[in-house]
Length: 299
Image (cartoon, rainbow, N blue to C red):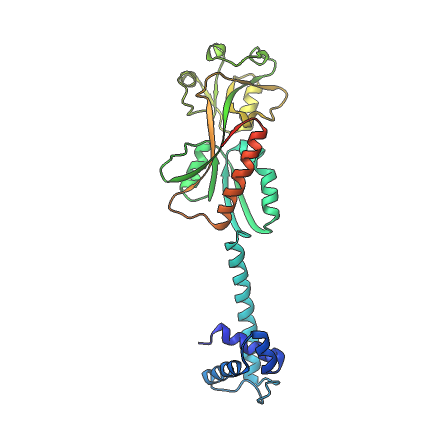
């Protein structure tokens, strides 16, 4: 079998028409280049050049040259792709994120991240924390951004920020007119609409009210529509309430248990790709800075 190094030497000699110029190009001695050419001819059992001056290829030489150019071109391109991926300049990145982060923190960051990596493909899934966990655990995505505990079995995590839940209600309601933080007793007589973001809050008072809820809505846009229609109130993380429509208001709660910790999650025992590792480092820093600017608690 002919080695790539030998084929590259042959192509250089054929391109330059002599051994001296080719050896300078290859940073090898003329005798070493001559020996390589002889090894190729011995291996094939036929001459590659019509004369010792190496200026004219034989018919076999022309055939080998054409094939060598294709092999070397494909090899060089493959090596360029491999290097680009190893340097986090290319590849495929699959991300699952909760809607609040996907809409508030990811767009600006991904624009800059992708601009420096024109050969990077990004697949973003916008879904709730429960589904984010499932997608990460099954390997359907490389990274998940969600309000999940940092000690889940089988997952590695990097905490980004913490934000309190707020009560979302109609702007024309009595609750919206309150200027102080709300107690659970202030919600007596109201109907609670559940959603995936708040379902597992470790608040005893909330869980009591959640147990009486008759409506659960998973999609955030639909949830907002239900509240706006007067069907009840709901709880959402602060980040999700930044751009509420004018018809809705968000009021803070006194209960310290109504808190979400948002982090980046990936599978333990599975080394993230170079581009995923770069995303973890750069997005964590960017998201923390953005979270602080919004008044959130960022590590």
